[in-house]
Image 1 (cartoon, rainbow, N blue to C red):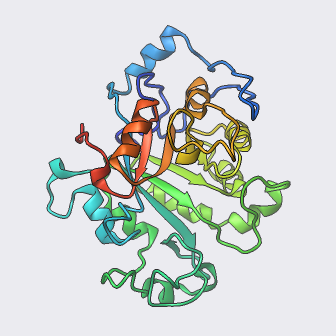
Image 2 (cartoon, helix red, strand yellow):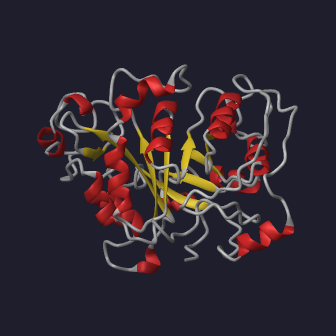
Length: 324
């Protein structure tokens, strides 16, 4: 899994965090009130010079097509991925996304499919919990009356060009796993055995990848399956918890909601202490990717505070062109 447009690098710093998972890991012990700020693992000029040998400077956030630009195309479908990658007309110059984000979950018989929700109902013409439903039924379900059916991860990866990165959002494949931090990640290991198939599928392609999840158990399993694969914990309720998991698992990036980004009008002070998460990520030498961006105004505000990647529902939410 080589190459790619370099989502796993910081704007300006150009940290050498490649798809092999070689992130410049920090040793911060950040507190919820933001009072402690740590040091980068290696902030020397030699480290920065080495990083510039890997990436060209590009001072704009990475454009990540959330579920294949879910606000524009039928989400998590082959049509959406082709449109987001600009391959529908084979016009490389028209590509609006640097990366594509997609969601994965197993069927009851072990097929890995691309779908966000736990249940088929609502988005498709079928019913049933994905991980309790056979692949034949899941793969024949039509999404949003679009003519697209639920794709396999293998089919999705075959659709996405090798120079477009893929952020694989890992959903739960069992009713027995706990979202967020868990007391005993090894105790859930068997419930995440299906991730071995995910890693196998990804290893057959040359795209740069990042595997992210709200479930700590998924990150624990991935570290055992392939210690080198880049991973990220998706922040949800607590900034402090997110930073703790990020540090414990030597994550390659920070993934956070818009409401956690201090210095923007979208920060929620009723739920979060005034911690500068962009600064915390950058002090660790990590890029920070923010979800979900709906408008050009949000994109501009997040760009201004130094965010490194934007999960976008609409390609028109950003004004910069494709630099690749």
